[in-house]
Length: 369
Image (cartoon, rainbow, N blue to C red; front, side, top):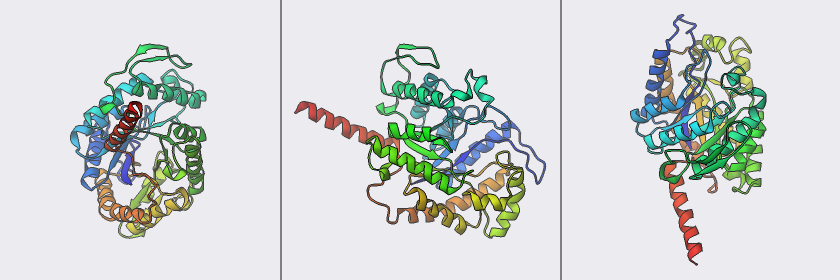
């Protein structure tokens, strides 16, 4: 399994001090957070995409390109890339470039986005969210896999003999996760292509996530990509930890109460009982996270939100120390126990490159015979 963190890139006033970070300081903090994630032994850092306050990350590919030069092992991903409001040609070129700059240490999660006003800013209509996601990804996929593309569709001008540059590293397209909280059409899209499905797993109860993941697994098998257990699944999540549970609750409560994503709604106690949010000791986080497997099966990637709601950088880095030092080592060991042999490892560029080479050799041998 791969373990890591994701950021939505919010700029939020710290409710305990009244301090509001600037764009510049928040962006610099993200670099520090990602580097620290690598230092404590995490595998993945994923950056969100937003084009509206109070969020800053309008260009996750730019942030991840910078991080590619500042890290050595960390897989750089997105959470999510807005397939609906981006041009597939631009995405094909930008992320192939990142693939080269990072020596393959990247993938991306595609999503629709749920902020209505953003769509017209980029000439789109949120009511067409699903058709946009389906059509634009179909083109993006072809741009990475075909040297020259002839294409026409509903949402952009046609292409004739178009070749995106640079071509994917080693002839292997970036791995794609399709991210969704509530849209079965996106789970179907992931299953149809045999891609990964990432369930954010923050705002809804585990029973809802289980339905989405199980639907994706069934459709993955239906489309002939392997058994349901071989489908590639990632989960989001959120935690806040201190040595003592009550200390964690006391410290995190003012941040939760004022968070831009869920503040001023249900109480912290209600939210932690009804969703996977875990506020408590490292052992409570371990136990809760291991329980995810009970309803989604063995999966490949677990990411947590750690840096939002105005939490100061010092606190976020302390959370990463706990996550990397006390939580993830136990999770690695426990998730590996009794893991069926058919369950695939998390996808990496090197593994997919080797798989492509084996397939190419098999096809060559078949032609020769």
